[in-house]
Image (tube, rainbow, N blue to C red; front, side, top):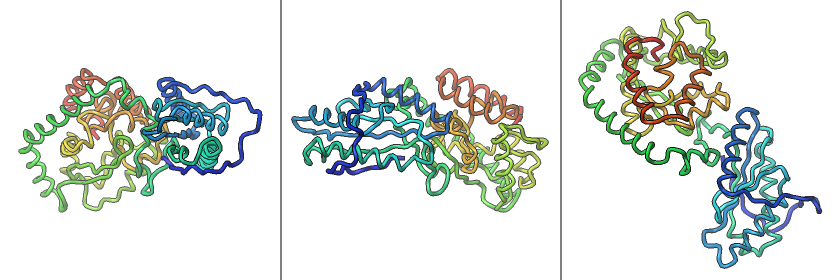
Length: 379
């Protein structure tokens, strides 16, 4: 979440006179490392991390260095000694990290800090120079959107390792996207007779549409509509599955229902006879090739959760939605499936996301048919 503030020309209450404050501004790489470290700490401590970003116009004029000197002095005067100051973009933007702030104070103190910085700037610069600065306040973790969890998109400023300075860069991501495009298009064409046959069987099995459209949470918390072949009766009540999944996540997979598999109940009375066969063989997942073609999913990646699953997530669980695009198949599908607790599934997803490579993707693709044929924990 980012909040924009104007910079007031007047000076509010200042820091106590004589307070000794650090004036060292960390370079971009060191500040990025500090940001990542504080984000991970926030995940464990369930406290908010706040970042105030101060930008100078791309055309600051002849006195750009003087403006930055005043800006740095203003930030130092308006913040605490424990806050971390550094360059987000050298000569363009600085940031100050306010860590270990209780979630209940996620917004209020930010306004005060922004106002103090703006007031200090107003005291040090002419109004024309102050107008060349802009300020944004970012909060981690994100608050859910108006339509619930995943209603908004995560703020990428807290994930600098996933940007242009990422360890894989465009080579891996670009080629992976090309493989997704070519692979999904080829499979959609090659499997078109099978897709048509399944569509006919679904139609004959029970009245209703061929496809089931479901809201899922994708990369960086973006919502998208995932396609599957319909395996349930029309207008099936999702409450049964919602209650099961909630218990599953809260207990890290220690669910007592006999025959329960990861995220799916066997013997579900809502499932049609043809639907049971499609689920057992994972053929109901084939329409997701269209989501891959659209760029909403990848052939390989974490499973995209439902919005009501996200309600039960801990902060570290949400990292699986940040570090990789969701996929049709993935490491947990071929390595864990029904034998995997929820926490273990998340760790498998994170292990894939942080160590993924072309060779890892190939191994997962090659292992997927055996996992599907075995039908263990099919989801």
